Length: 247
Image (tube, rainbow, N blue to C red; front, top):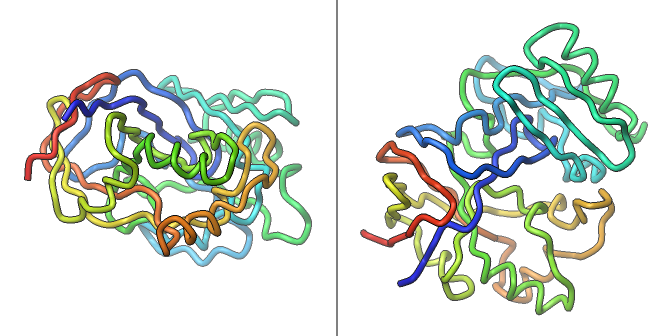
């Protein structure tokens, strides 16, 4: 098939920056380590113990400027950058770190939106799915949508974990219920990823530039882009690994 894993990304704070990884160890039933490990509850959140749905958190669908954040996690401290703000390095699990982060991010929020109130964790990744998921996307599908719009769509806007290369456009849409082997890891494809307004934002600027949802409806008849998977066999993966559809 000639399929390969092209890129690996994680997002330490849900909707607040992404970082590129060369390799990562995946664990059965879990998302990427420290992917969506923290989330930012807004001041109108109604939180329950454990996982909570995304409506309780500040996110790019409501505050487009958040899409321009980049992140780097070193195992103890998190560094965030944004084109309109000075870089911030902080310890997210400390009271001082949380306060520094909230002060840093508040200027990105308009007064008409519920503002950031606290950093929360759940003992698991705060993925958009109620199970710990790994999002898998296809570079050829992004290229096809870019060609349709007449402009290159940066990968960051899709907030993916794994990008695959060598596939035909939209091939991933037929994988629901099937299994992939990537490196030493095996994943089962569970469901398509329904998209929101956050994908309309240019992540270099934090400004809306293309109506990706309309483009998806024209191309596919829905607003799905990519698939959610669950890890069913633990192991390491590395950019460049061979990808096989095995079941």
